[in-house]
Length: 295
Image (cartoon, rainbow, N blue to C red; front, side):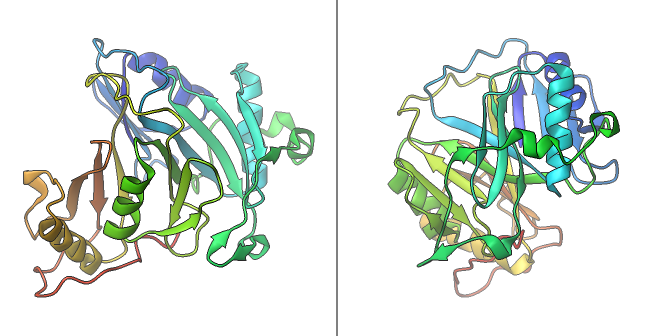
């Protein structure tokens, strides 16, 4: 996730000081944070002192979701929030996961969660069973001793999913399902759709709960977000589909030898699709892939 902030020091106090992410690179107006010093960045913060506040009922980021390797790691995350006296806005048992909800200093939504074992997830006709029940906070905290809570997140922490406010669910489904190749894993939440690859409950979600208005162009919040694909072929196929369908891409990422393809999503945000190995030459035919991730 790449986020614009009006106050880098304040935002860093939250992501590093409260959540326990590690600073990987610190430039004057930009900081990247991750779970391990030699690991990839999870969140990049860019400061713009003139950035406008983002009105609440506008499209854009609903929340980013940090996923912890174990339930005990989530309990430690909860304890860090308590130690910092940071307000918690909600806590839910979703059957597939347990989650805690809060906001960062720029009012971006943040979810902290840990998955339950996939063996316990219930599927019916391609739809995963998810609910929103109160989280048993006492049971969660009982898994740890407060004095053993480490200052930083464990190395296996990652961005499990992101959730977006969008104008139109049909447009979101066309982009994330028909164009990118995600599966729709949940349609039962009014005004929302959930998308995933590899049988996960969701890597992306979209909802229309905030209405249709766009935030100011220079407001705090989402600048871009990134998905990593598992093969150079998948990236080459996606690049070819973008040319065929006329989807807006950044010119600097349009070369066939690029490992990064930047695509404008239905909200006008940049989605960066990345492959860690170079892409092959464009193929003669365009094929559809559903293998964006196996996480």
